[in-house]
Image (cartoon, rainbow, N blue to C red; front, side, top):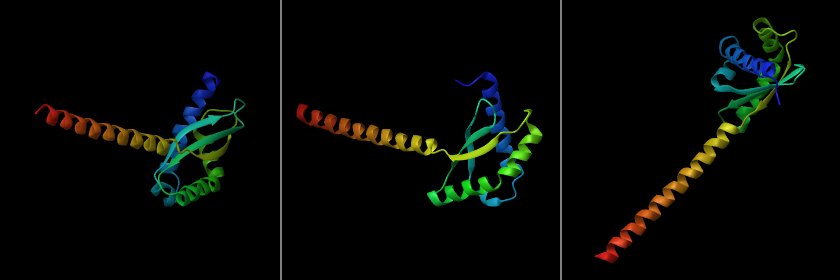
Length: 133
């Protein structure tokens, strides 16, 4: 279980990295890719932090954006060091977070099941009305 301090640092890293990516990165391919940092998990010793990013696009676009973020690690880490209050800034590891897409997929399945049920209920209702007439 993460300590309260670690959770606060995770949140701070998430907020500040989002702002750095939006406002300070010059590579428009990252800004145009609709990158969102969904969560950060720093190790208890704050040596490394895994940054989960949600990227809308196909697999090739996702891999390209993660590669760009990995190439900008030193810039991101030094920019982060200027705005967060920790003794040493953790090394950044970027991972693709597909949870948003997975959630949308589950939602579409549930919607189709609901639609199928409504169609079935409507059909049964019409058959009942015809039998009673």
